[in-house]
Image 1: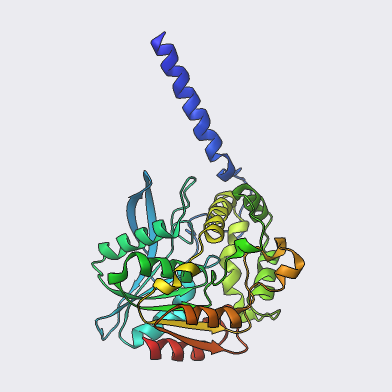
Image 2: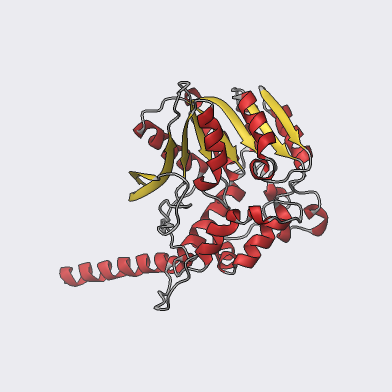
Length: 341
């Protein structure tokens, strides 16, 4: 009787685990994949620099965090940590990495868990605190005690949380068109992870490009922007995409439900806000009331409000530039960044 009960419990547990995995399983195809189809770990996509992996345990499972570590020829003794946005990877920091190396900075550019070449877990409690802890563990493994942080888009939210969580480890903070300068929950209806996942599954290379054209580049598109959509587009072409989409849905929920702007007054370190004035990025705008949607993503206004809230802040406004000033006009971005650092 006891053995029968034990077997029943084991089968029930396996059944529950199977249900939890269901959203992120994919039906493997036997058809040849195009060269631009990328698996969940981007194993056939090369970054500009060598990629290393930090292996660690988090939330009861083994994970791997991919990162680029760049050493300057003439070190100045300081390190810069680069934190990517939600729709990007460490690879898009290449020009910034080189500019920092030229000034003697050591540079660390990780892919956060759920992004790029890093692990895409089926079950993970994504919080900015957890991602900060993972990143701090990476720095500790490299014996790096202090950094200046540059965070773009979602990376700006993570950089803010990291600076608050590990204040003695951060010298300076740079926020580049960070999202999270407003609380979308006030005007955007909440969508469940499952709803967001289903929407992510419908993404195509064309829809990804159109989203960036409209939201990031003010309706304009140049071929020089094409590398920015290469990874996201390649994910959609591979049978692993449901796993990528699931992680994207989980991190979207994190971004929507975990605002950082209310903690801006707690930031006590020198902070630079670099704000492309044409940016109108706003999470969930499509689901907001039309009148409210028009007010979202006003980066000129949001940037100034953030600068007032952060005590030791400087604000650099870049007219005519959108969500990625480091791509649209790198010389202007570089000048502002290096002057501050």
